[in-house]
Figure (cartoon, rainbow, N blue to C red):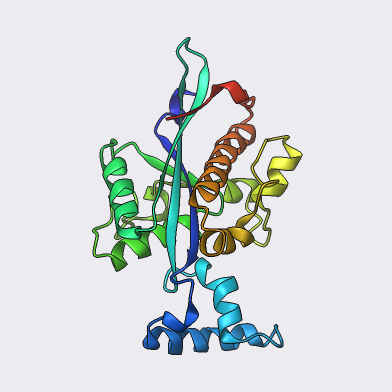
Length: 238
């Protein structure tokens, strides 16, 4: 476990950049219409607005981050293995990213590694793109410029589970089920985040869901590495 102390587990929750399609910047509307035209080939009867509400949050150019959850391995007060978590949640994405960046940059950049489920395809590039949109330099752990593949300090539990099978996609929810890992999927899932944020206006519900996912990623990492799960009483929220 000592080798895992420098791993920072991450999960993010994202939504469309606005809850009202009509208020979106006109230049962005044009660009969204172009992207939506590709979706329309597979989806009949939906308008650009319908598809924006359903899909925009997964694209960093048309979405924004509202929650970032972090997890690290540590110990409880009597020395037992624990997962310690914290999260940043805000309607102000720039403030959220500033907090995240400050936290990450306080860690030893020469040792730090990031880990997420499908993180190499989603969480890490999304974070990097949104930081740049807000004019924030990337922290070293996200700055891949000039790095060779083996120098990139990113781990991905989905990639670990693939074992080289690059055609295979397995959701965190499925892996949690087969390894008997508790998740927050019973309360909501990723497809509901946009609605919970803009219609229910319940940011705390999304934050709790995000923390549940980051714990699940850390537990999944342990199982893939051949370790036992950490008990629920040793999941510490700080």
